[in-house]
Length: 160
Image (tube, rainbow, N blue to C red; front, side, top):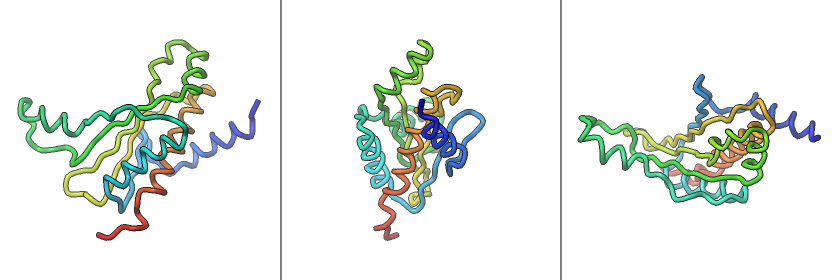
């Protein structure tokens, strides 16, 4: 059993700088940053974990395209995508804990900017229930990815 590692993961999650709502969605604002820089940092962070992101869901484009038909003319996002990926190690762990946890895969991270706030990039992701080692491992992975994006989102070269 890896008690020091488990303790470290729990400590990371409890002291994490990420905002979390009651709905289990965590978010992180990266400011100042550019969308393209943060998106590249997100793909790099996922790949650094040994994972391969699927083609992104272009969520912002879908809303922009369907908005007029739904009388929704004001944009919610300037740019918005959702990247999906799966960790075989975590998938096996959660599947062995309970077969219904298949719904936790793939993991996903949304990246977006808001209209008029082009210097702030947002990340958002769902937390897994942390009541099991698999859920804790998934949350630790997502926290590592978000932290890596925050650290590598091109802020060092920012020139407004």
